[in-house]
Length: 305
Image 1 (cartoon, rainbow, N blue to C red):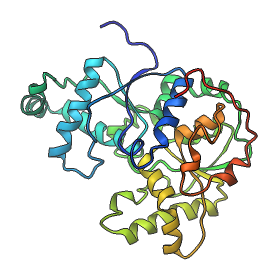
Image 2 (image 1 turned 180 degrees about the horizontal axis):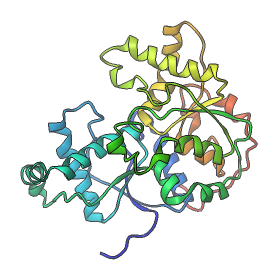
Image 3 (image 1 turned 120 degrees about the vertical axis):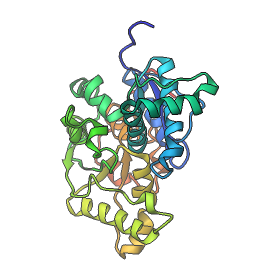
Image 4 (image 1 turned 60 degrees about the vertical axis):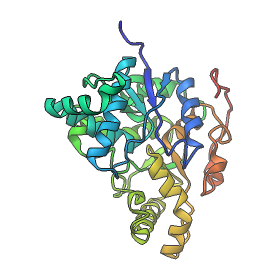
């Protein structure tokens, strides 16, 4: 098969970036293209299960996705923390248990001529920027530094635990890549206690009150710490923290109005794309207050979407 091309990935965008928050997918692709990533978008692959489906149901689905990436000879790049976590868990379980791996291959994948071998990995775009591309190289691409902008980092739960799935012992900087990226882009990282907690989305349908409480607590805490904007690497967190924020305001009986960006959008703004390029007009919470803080210099991508 030969040595794989650096920065070439099997691209797994996930459901929410194309469905619930469709502005996130084109923004991510524009940024990846401009940074020189060679993306082979994965076709005919299913939702990871988002941590909601049982292991019995989700593991065969995710084994199939991993097997398709193995056919391509590429690691998977995702822009979703939840996808990262769920596929990563399935990958680790299958790698550790040969009998389970054989059962999944025999009962689910063989019919398609696929075989999961455990030879590929899944990496969030955040990790790729930190480990494959390099943050110093990213700094060279910045034309609109986010100087003076206070940015709250919100990882969500799947980018912080479990540590064995995330390989945090091997790659300890994964615990702080979001803050490091914010600072490379010229912004000021604002730390909150809730940055590694659940956003509230997974329980929205089962317990709306608690979900809105969590959304309100996270955004209010960031606002109290002086944040002008919040950034998350997870579309589900974006869907909750942006989309549910007006309802969280009603629930908490106070205004919040904290703009929330997905990680590729923040990177895109700093490397020359405009808010319109990043589809920010589609956000529920207006981003205008944040946009006024940045001196925009539009630099057209060589590979527009």
